[in-house]
Length: 186
Ligand code: IMP
Image 1 (tube, rainbow, N blue to C red):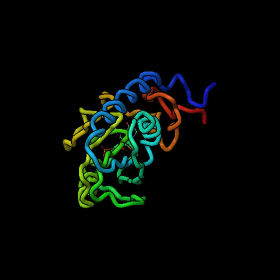
Image 2 (spheres, rainbow, N blue to C red):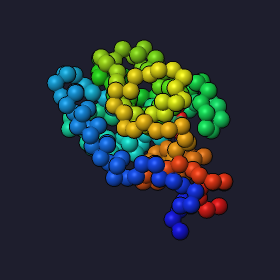
Image 3 (tube, protein in one colour):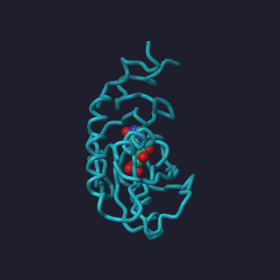
Image 4 (cartoon, rainbow, N blue to C red):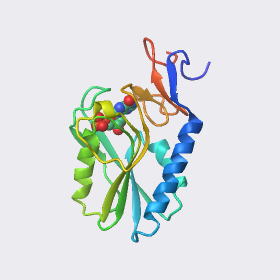
């Protein structure tokens, strides 16, 4: 028996498909920023983006910086309220640098909108967004996603960084919880 219950997790996007898409995004980002000049800092939004970040930065063929921003949004576990708190700030200023925000998923868009407004006050040279996933059916505010991994249906997903009540971030694929109860042994 694996650490999750395979009867309760349906694989939506398998590991090799994720790897292939992340490689494509890395190549695209490398080409787009190669000749822009100035520093590129990849800002990862904790915690959900950590695996996407780790794979994506290794697919970027440029001398980038990496920094982290911790955000927590109030609301029920499966629905953001749009009220966002910075729980961990960047360690260095991004003024005059090119910022690439790396997020796990843009769902309603409320978190990303808050983040983009917050980062804009720091006067970076530019801001772009890379998100592994996007659920277009749930959009409440339109936010730009310049580099998108996959559009997904309106289902709650887990794995490859995304959690189910803080667990299962370490699944090597993106899955959907099906059936009753938690998708791991008690
Ligand atoms: P938004 O503000 O509604 O766009 O939500 C963004 C945040 O909600 C993401 O960064 C995730 O942390 C969380 N989230 C939204 N949908 C899911 C999901 O299907 N699985 C796990 N986390 C999710």
